[in-house]
Length: 363
Image 1 (tube, rainbow, N blue to C red):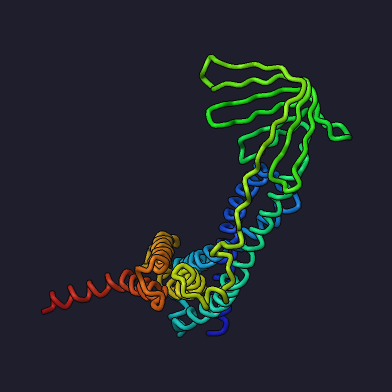
Image 2: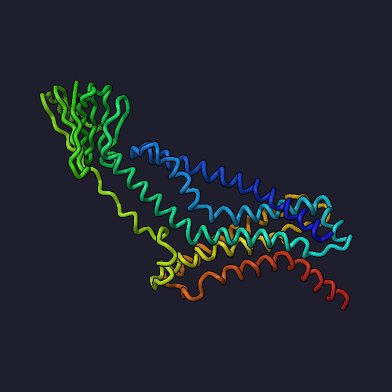
């Protein structure tokens, strides 16, 4: 019966975990899509890299999703079994707590190993690859020609160019250019224009022909209107940041041999996140235990509270190590012990207090 019960518990936990993780993953991907599309629209990313950036972003953030999904999955699955008295019936037939802990532990060990591979290897590589893609997309966007009927921003948004049509030879027709220089705003319109880029891609040159230029400060009545036969508008593009030095994109082997507190804190965080899977899964079995006549979702809020405290404690420990407030040799192992003691106190505390009061009354 123990094997049958273990498979049944494992099936229920896996189904609940898949549903919860699927919902959380959908929310995560939706946020990734919004962020990537905003950057793609602002920086003229090629369409071919948008989906890849979304996938890489989700992979780099999945370390925060899997432990929480496992915790809620175990609490929801076992909460239903307790609420429907299935656990009580199994225990009455001779089953023990091991029939519940063993399948949950096996699933937690499998996810812990997978999450360790993600946080220590795949996630840093995904972050580095995403930054390289973003940098390449920015460079490609700097050299991209102006598309007809669309507003194009340059120089970090300091200049905006619009062309109604583009001829086969690259001539822009019915062109609008707006450029900001501090409080001064310059607006130029022309019947035609040419767009060129310097070889280094850092300067875009818009040459306008036969148009008008309006200069002034918004809110002021003093404006200057000029007509021109030819007007050159140079736009300087900001230099791209060196994205290869991102700390969370460094390989774990580089962090392992470093004595820098920030790198040691990053390594300790990568090690701590897989451990949270195992700790939360084992604690979830105890958190899911319901009292008679309690609702099946009665312990969900407590599980969310425990995860909130756990994740914030790990984040605080990471900051303390990076600042040198806490020795790196201690790592983040104390956070796991603190959460275990806290959960044991929450779960067993009321029973211990009740027994002590009973002894005092008996005495």
